[in-house]
Structure formats: structure tokens, C-alpha cells
Image 1 (cartoon, one colour):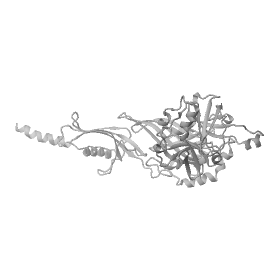
Image 2 (cartoon, helix red, strand yellow):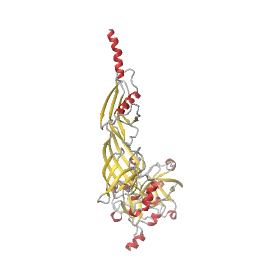
Image 3 (tube, helix red, strand yellow):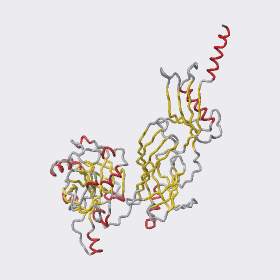
Length: 500
């Protein structure tokens, strides 16, 4: 009997010396072990993984059931840190955590051992955005279409391959980059330089991509550096709208990602080859319309270009508020403004009544109408109705982005919404033809030839917003009403845009 009393303390001592069951699954070669007191960063699923991180492997830790005293959460994390030091890691990323309960008497922690790449010697060109703008302005006549300042947005679906958790992400401005000719020793045609970044580790001046031209005008070979600084070779195509869209599916660290990357050019303005109305393009007044109760307004880009102050006027309330540019698409002459300090319930008694039309149902000869502010103050302060039909599903030189419409329009109508007879948005009024240009070059004077950008191209811009699903799924409150009733309900949401 005495033997048993001797063995029990010894057994308890052995259990307490080995409190954890540890399994390690290596994915990448381990690095040299770190000192026992080396700091190890703890990253949870709520945190962003550092851009320069990659996985060395996964450690799975559970506490022995009969250990006394029972391990704490801190001691369990410290055990994971110790394993990270043994493998040369710099951080642990906690993927799963389970507390003791009535069924499981032990802690469980599954964590990835992460290594942070040393990017202290990463190639860089230290240029401010002002420096790049000066460069582009001084070389305007010699710029390739890919050169300029671009806003890079990312939208994706992330699946944690361990937990099965799916998360949607939308970074409207993940990066702001300047693409310019390579004047360094990288020996590429162009390089992309970080101006701003939403990702930790990607600092201003870092080279984000190296770019070569191909035999095709709008196709480029790109060596793109991903969030973790690893390389990815691909082709980028500038589409007919001047946008770069790239779709990719990849697996890195512990995520399966379906990602869409969209590049929208911010500077310099894209050149237009169409003879649009010069008076309209030089003006600083136009029409806009509300698309969200949070104060987002769609209008024409040329109304606000190069102007420092933007005002949005609510004519029925005689209220003026300041606005700023949220997203711009110069190629399609569209801009999304954000009104400062708006309280929807103070301005409106009813919700926004119009919805987005299915553009595939648009037909030549379809009846349409718009509301706007033609000729500005000369016509008064209230929106004017203009009715007409779709004359063609294509614009000048068969441009697929535009409708040709018969609505009588004047400078000031630009940026106004175009509706079908159901009160659905089918486009945004862009401009009419410049009569002087056509008379001098072709000897003709156009009669009532006007254009609108199709709403499908506006959707590309709206898709960058977190509120895009609300906008796209908005219920139409105008269907079945007479034109008079539709106009009455729409009128409060038609806004005058002034810029200075």
C-alpha cells in the first residue's frame, strides 16, 4: 500500500512536467531557431495578416486532461510561442481556439507559425503624388495609356480552409499607385509605385509591379507582387472603358480566395475623341441624382474636373451642401460624389423611388425621359422634364457604351438620370454633339443628337461600394404610375451640381 502512495506523487509530477500535447505540421522549411526570450507576435482571425507574412507550418496544442493545476489560456499561448521560436517564426496566427467545457476538459489551440519577410531592402522609388503629377503633366503628349495614377480596388471572398468560415471583403481603395516609365535599373518598360496602401508593410515608394508592353496596344505582361510580397506573373488588359479588371483564384496561408482587382485611372484625365459639346464640357454646372440615403450622388465627371469646391443643391428645399469626390471614372465621364453632413429624414419624406434597369431589355424606339437643369439659371432653379426615345443602342462611331437619344438637351443636363417608362434607370445623360465642330469638319449641323452612358457601365462603378447590393436590389416604386406621377416622385431627388 505504501508503494502506491509513493507512486501517485511521482505520477502527478510527471504529468505536470508534460502539460501539453503538441503536434506540428510543416508546410515550408523551418528557419534557424530563435532565442528562448525572442518576442513572438500574436495575430487573431480579427486581425489582418501582415502583408509580408508566410506560413512555416501549423501547431496544434491541447492540454492534458489530468494536469494539475490546469493550464491557463496564457500558458497555452506561450506553448505555441515556444514552438514558433523552435521553428524560427516571428508570429503565431490563431486559427482555432476552444475553452474547457463540460465535454472537453482541456484547452485547444490551433495556430500557424508565421514568418515575416525582411522587406528593408525592397526596391523603391521615393516619389510623392505631387511629383508624379508633375511628371505626367510635363509628358502629357508622350504618355502610354497605362501611365498615370490608378486607384486599385479589391473585392473577394475568403474561405478559411480550417474553420470553413467564409468572409466577403471589399477594399474600395486597397492601393493608389503611379505607373510610369522605368528609369531605374529594373529594365522593364514601366513600374508601379505605391502612393498609398491599406495593407501593412506596403509603404509609399515600394515597387508594386514591373510591366512590359506586348505586341498588342492594350495588353501588358505584369510581374505583380502580392500582399505577402510573393511574385505573380499575369497579363493585364485595358478594356474599352479604360479599366483594368483582373480575376483570380488562389490559395495562400490558410485561405482560399476568389478575388477581383479593378484599376480605375485617377490621373491624367483620359482623352475623349468624340466631338462632345464644348460649352457643356467647359461649364461648372450640371445635374446629379441621389443613389443612397447616405448621400451618394451620381453625375458627370466633366462637371467637377479640376475644381476644388463642389456644391449640391436641393432645389425643392432651397438647401445647399458641400460634397467631395468618392469614386471617379473619367473614361466614361462618371463620378460618384459624397455629400457632407446629410440627414436623409430631414430632407425627404419618402425613400428613393427608382431602381436599376436590366439593360438587356432596352430597345431602339423605347420611350425615355430625363430631368435636369438645362441652361442653368437662365431656365430657373427647378428641374425640367425632357422626353424622347432611344434612337440607337450605340453611340458615336458605334460606341457600345452609349445610347443615342432624341431628348432635347442643353448644357446643364449633363449628369442627369435617364429613365424608361417604368421609372427604371437606364443611363446617365452625357452630352450632345458639338455643332461647331461638326460644321467645320463635316459641313453639317446636327439636330437633336444626344447621348447617355448606359447604366451597365455605371454599375461597374457602383460595384465598388459596400452599399452596392442595396442599390442594385432597390425596389422600384414607380412602375405602373403615369409619367406625371413618376416625375412628381422623382423630382425631389434630382440635384443641381455646382463646382468652382
